[in-house]
Image (cartoon, rainbow, N blue to C red; front, side):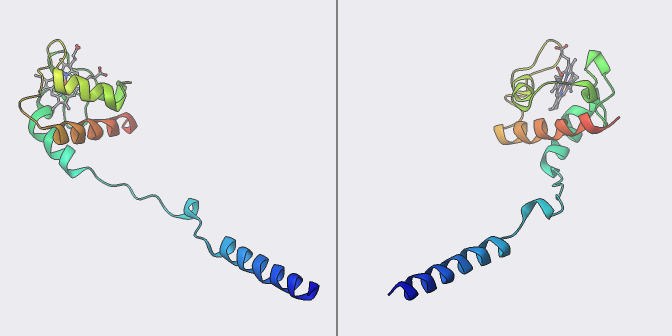
Length: 112
Ligand code: HEC
């Protein structure tokens, strides 16, 4: 009886080890950068005028986006409701478009 128990434990631990070793290791996978085409298109159409293609233009006192420290949520706020000379885009863009373009503006931080 005891023999069977030990045999059973061996099978179980063998199975666990096998699972642990064959489980995919996600940290080794190369990270894919998904280009936010929707946000890019919205930016090109509505924002480039003042902010420039690289976000640095700063026309009419528009800020250099590469220096912006705003979070995604705060950007969505500024784009939706406007701020000082920047017009609100509430009626112009829908929520998904505003979110996409806000996400797109996050990439300027990485441009020197
Ligand atoms: C008419 C010119 C103009 C256009 C067009 C414009 N902006 Fe702006 N934007 C500004 C100005 C000016 C400011 C600075 C506002 C302030 O002084 O409070 C600003 C600020 C911002 C900020 C805040 C940055 C920060 O760090 O505080 C974000 C984000 C932003 N704009 C995104 C956009 C997006 C996205 C679009 C297109 C949907 C857009 N802007 C279109 C002029 C413009």
